Image (cartoon, rainbow, N blue to C red; front, side):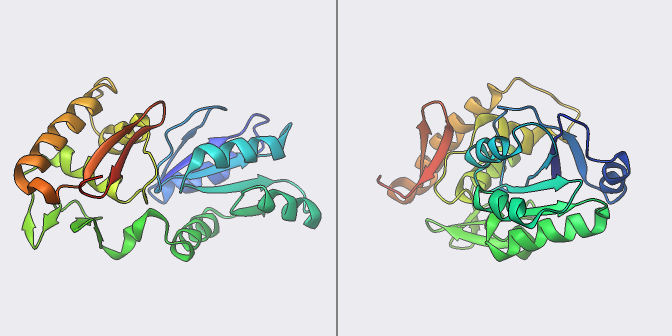
Length: 223
């Protein structure tokens, strides 16, 4: 799981960040206005100026990502306000890393986010995609896709019909890789994916569309 930190006043303790790393997760800074969150991501928003405004903007950019505010003092009225604005949870320090991870996973399960990534398979538009890296299948037969193309298709089909930014797809493919190609490589993968789906599935192929300024989106065949 990737934890993104928006922490202008550096209120999120280093101990919590170290705990996330020790548990095998990947915390990194998240700049205001940055896009490209994926359903597997958790955005942590630390205390600071205009917290409510930052939650609103983050929720608009986050899609299905989990958004959690991390604060230094308990205030029930503010907690209700932040959750009303789009935060999935509002935690008060100190928070053990194990509790934070468990809460993020519980939110994802409760809301069906990430297409039940921990539960295995999801079938969308007749295509079955897997969380464990197996190639997508149609009627039990693997589709003739490269590993990268299969992962792009999986992310698009799991997005619930929402556009997936190029940055999110690039991060999903290359965040843990020694390779760091330009984000334009995603356009190449999508172009190849469209062609291979059309060749292999014909009229049954899911449509991979372009949402201008937002990214790529999967739709049903023939649309």
